[in-house]
Length: 116
Image (cartoon, rainbow, N blue to C red; front, side, top):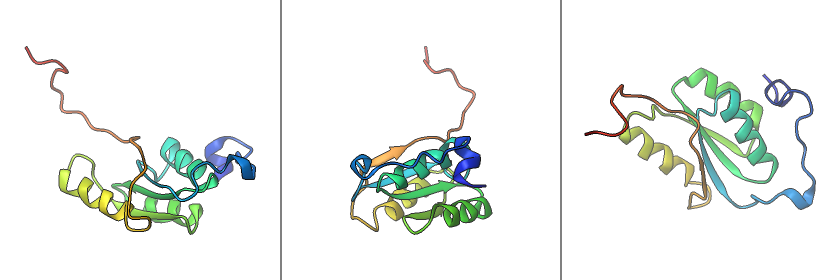
């Protein structure tokens, strides 16, 4: 999988003046593939330090390798509150803060959105 595979052709290279996320940290859930990977790739292209998380360690490792030095990975099932807290802690390690979250992964409970 490459940026071209995910983004459908041109990797979306950005000019120096478009590097609006330099010095910022982002956490992308579901970042091992698809939209999450594409978001992480774009954030990195624009200067961010990105942590991708997901449940599949092997997929995350491959994606992290493709994303390069400004990416790190953490296994996280977002339905587990402690795992999410750990993912946020990992994401803040490089810069001491978390500036952006791309909440790309989700889960459902089967319950109504509005309880009566």
